[in-house]
Length: 224
Image (cartoon, rainbow, N blue to C red; front, top):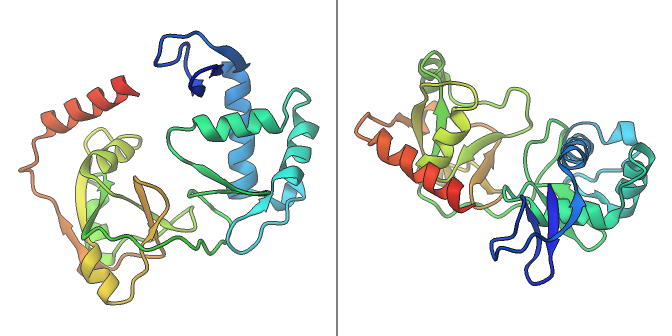
């Protein structure tokens, strides 16, 4: 659910970090429904909703709100903005009268983010697919871009959605950029690329303490 704290603004959960219960904006069901709608509209089927998306993925906020209210009479622009503002994953961004998804597109967009300054990036894979990735590189399958993680923790967290025993691949971002590969910073955790060629990939050995990583993830989740 999404609520509003008079002192700290919108938040997700039953109470604000300050302990205040807050005023309800969207209940759990409304949050899920609106989240799915916004994801579909800005990542997958804007044309079906009459949204004119430009090459960089932007659509008009008011047009999106009109389409949203047609589907959900209880929705409005304030509820949309509360979704965006309280989203801890930073999935969307608003710039004036425009809104777009930061990542996760299946439609053909040309995102104009700055390139990462990080020397290394990470990608979590299953043991069944890791050999083919190291041999042929990482390519997008259902999405427009390859999604890479800025940290070991995030890469493993994402990989665990699909496998219980993830393997970590390190990407030499510094070398890839020197060779002209674009690596776009979508947010603090995600970097996007058209394709990562095998010469920039290496398997992270089992020297990483998995228990320490799991504990770090649990501690961060408890804080959030």
